[in-house]
Length: 274
Image 1 (cartoon, rainbow, N blue to C red):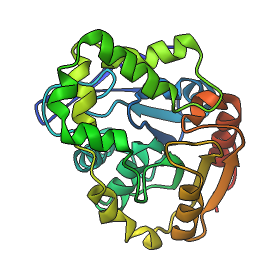
Image 2 (cartoon, rainbow, N blue to C red):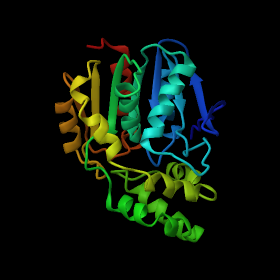
Image 3 (tube, rainbow, N blue to C red):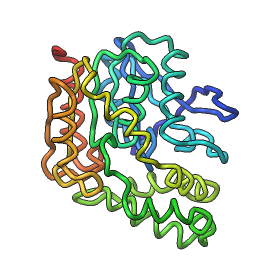
Image 4 (cartoon, rainbow, N blue to C red):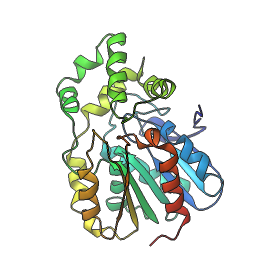
């Protein structure tokens, strides 16, 4: 099991954001989603770092970054990504994003002026509807869920995270994905759900037709969180984008079809972008 240690820090709105840089070459930024962290990119980092400068980060309220009470919405995450790109002094990096990370990357590009060379969007939150009944339940009662006994919370989150996989997660992978949300992470888990709001994707959805950079859309055919229809609709909304389906993968494609996804990303970044 390869664990990603984020050794660098960046101060943001009173919190500490953790990030790391691997390899040398043209820059590529990896953006995770919810309730994930940079951990889901471990095999992609290993494959790309011999050829590329790979930047990976944990969103505020996630993973190894601070989980203090505050704004962890998609609006804030998009602003944070734009600030990080400026901090890293990157010009037109490639961006690979999954789940919430897709909305974050699209907001950074379309609303905050982050220039990118290309976008690879993997089972991303980009088009309504995307809020599950569980999200809405938490949004209505965040204080109740935050107060759950730790054992009940852990059982709930294990079941929730497991549902993101089509074939099922290995036990050690599930444990690594659950761990950041235990203990002090319990309140943070429900906080990010309570602040999820479709208005953050509504604000950029109307701009997808203006995207002019090459875009690859990757979707797991067995995604139960964001069904495959979202991938087809997004491909229609972004001009000249390419859609590639990953057979048998659920929402968490990085775990369900790790080698296949890594190969797709590697070929997209190292081949001709057009």
